Length: 120
Length: 251
Image 1 (cartoon, rainbow over the protein chains, first blue to last red):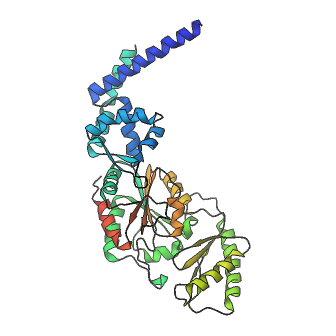
Image 2 (cartoon, each protein chain N blue to C red):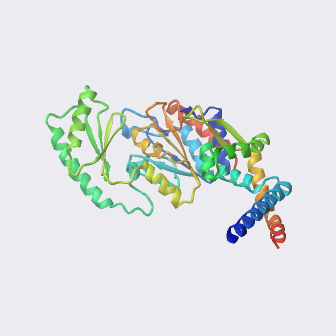
Image 3 (tube, chains in turn cyan, blue):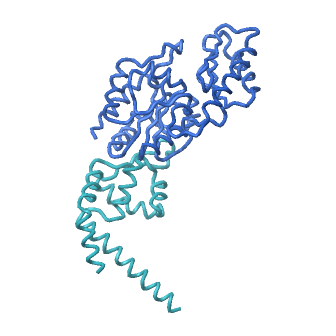
């Protein structure tokens, strides 16, 4: 029982830490780590459907829809009809999305130091 | 299936500027128009200029049913990869036994020539491409009847070949040979490409289209519901517009 409580405490702390890191990267680099992962996946595989992107990122499609909204609003990601399935959409990286991705990559090192510092 | 020259296709092509992409094309009916005599097939000069421009900026692959020797004579460009005989010739690190394929094709060729000899149908001819065969009937009078006869002939060959009907041609290929889809994926792996684009027009190109690989953008020349390709170009004459679209990408 004690082990379960300890595990629950660790998971809660980890969740909070992840939330903190995502907020930090969002504030300083304009993208959360999760958003970076989405953009990065779309850079490698342009034209993925929502369902396929969710699969590639190991998340539920409904979670993805919520996470995509700000990226679509900021025009970092574009969305068009699927070529073979009229009920579906495909996603692709825009020029602004690519610039955002590059900015994150270039400046990530400083953030990493901060994260290491936060952990300590 | 949507036109690659439409808004969705254009957006997708633009986003290829950010990924390491291999640009792969079939030859006949794709880069070169289909002609009455296959030996006269050439890439038109305007297409060739665009291709050479693309070749200077990006990695290109030509994946064709022709033999590599034949392709090199008629292409007019030097792409990074040239794959012949529907995917089985020129593949880096391939374990496929080419010598055995050659022997099998020689045996098939003799059998086919003997069987189709009497009575010989005017306009019917067998193209021996070293590792595969193509039986052409474009110039035969009763194409339907000739095609049925050729199919019945090649279906009884030993060892059993892979038979792929094309445009007025029946392709006869060693059964275990790597196909165009396999070849494209092998090139992607070899060159560490994240993504590939493939344009083709024929049934043998369905080996790429039917992979349904999310890292491959598939485009068919000619719209048909039977195809597994994602996008289409209306006909071969749209290839120049498509190449121009690719060249708009500066990255």
